[in-house]
Length: 308
Image 1 (tube, rainbow, N blue to C red):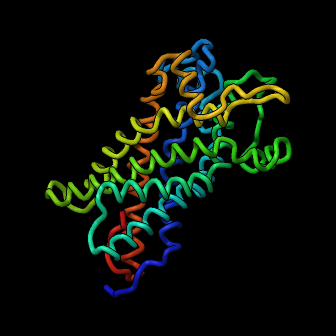
Image 2: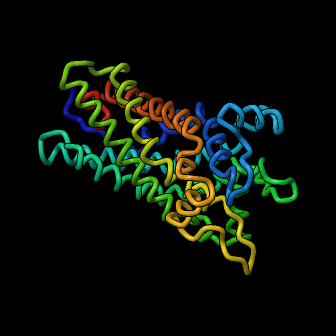
């Protein structure tokens, strides 16, 4: 093995590919999660009793293919958001190890995760907004549906009908959610992986990556779901000219949800969210680790790990 090092851009490419691969598997659960989060807005009657009820009603009313509505936007989201966040985090992690000659501790991992999440979410906000709208469209009355035909159709229509800046609607709560998600997800994955290896419970390999990923997914779900609900509602809201928006900020959403729907409504769709985020976390990290190992092996790069 040579002393050749992996180019920085490769970390971004591999991060994006891992996210896209995972998304193609879990997109139906992301759609269900979005539908459940906007169900019962403003005190309206809940449309779904639970995750399985939501799946049944969506398939019955809109057809099986409706479960993959918004896939083009989901892929573009991964190509922007995940590419950036994993690339930034891996680069920061590698730089930390080179400067200190040791693995980052929990606080350092969380700080790097928050930074990576904020940058990635700003880059990916247009894709996030389009994804929310496309997955939510089927629950609206026919006359009110936006009927985007794909990612680029939505992109150009939003820019033309609402202004380019509208593509960054909800950017602040999106960045807040991303900072929580990445601080929890990336830091918990790195720390769980390091603990399992140092305690000799597991060795480097898919078993290690799977165990650390499942732990990371559970922690991330509990920590980020309230912020995710706020982001979803802000990005999905319709504001007619001259009318006040239903929500002003992340805090406003959270306060109104608690007031009208109860405290535990902040974790509405937990099963769907974890069902989406858990496997997505597992698949993302396993694919990323395998792609890194494959690249390093065949390109003669030093080491065999991802840098996470």
